[in-house]
Picture 1 (cartoon, rainbow, N blue to C red):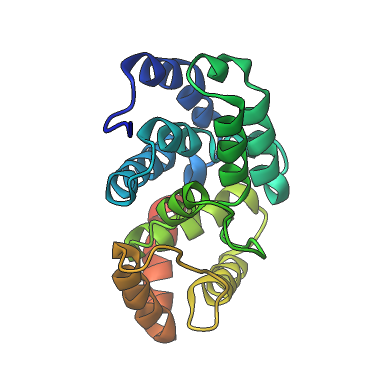
Picture 2 (picture 1 turned 30 degrees about the horizontal axis):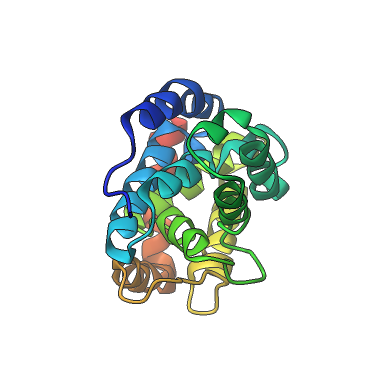
Length: 212
């Protein structure tokens, strides 16, 4: 039987033992981000017929690997999920393997498609491509991880990241046809294509986030 809502004891465990860890991460991967990914994942679960308990846990664990090197955070996150024996209260070993692989597959720059529907769900949910959110998170990440860079250097990093990831030639891929992200990505690409407008947006966000 497919679950329609996550079980209450599982929610209590995740909210008290897992989600607080996100308070230690940067603004682009904080509590606000993970709760958004959970919300998006749960909505996609209900439209795809996926097990909501599994989807909920995958979303909650997807960025836990940010406790280590960012470049391998998806691999680290999968290991943390797989090694968490507390999850055996709710899931079988085969379910946990699927969830581990979904966490590993969520990264936008992955060279392969997610191996299961669960990987596609969290990957899609993690790509919350609301232009305002993407642009602000990109500035926040630059300030948090490269504080030594000047304003001009931050702008270059900001532009290069958006061009490489989100533009018409970018590497981002959407895995669930007809999702809301398709419309949002089109709007974001229009902004990126207008470099003058993009610079104005960057300057406004940079000033708000840095106080300069």
